[in-house]
Amino acid sequence: MERLTVPDEEIDGGTRRAVIDARAVREEAMKIYWALKKYEDTGLSPEEIDSLNTFDGSQGMKYLKLYQEEQQKHRWIQVSERLPEEAEYLGISDGQRYMKRIEVAYMTDTIEYIIGYFDGCKWMDKRHNKINNVIAWKVHEPFIS
Image (cartoon, rainbow, N blue to C red):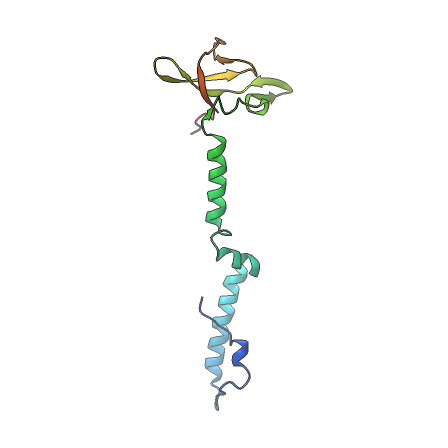
């Protein structure tokens, strides 16, 4: 943004005009007024404006962090790394507990994927058949259009 005020160090001993053109002063005052109005309309404090000038404080960075957190929540997790925690496989609906759907990768001749459940001890498909050779899992988020 173009500076609208005189820097403090230039006030003392600065050059003075012999003749002041009132129209020019009014025009400059209106430029300053409209620039200040634009700033005030943002609703941001000077500190918030300063933080926008750094990448870490920018809206883009905030959304990038949120995206990375979401991506981390929905990544494939190796069974050898850890099993689902209770909050990941149990939910509560109307005071009743229910099993959350979990996407499961398991080994056959090839790697296959299925929506299943984990009951804290074993893996099951939606028909409650036991799934063997589970190698990875992630919380299932159904596609919502």
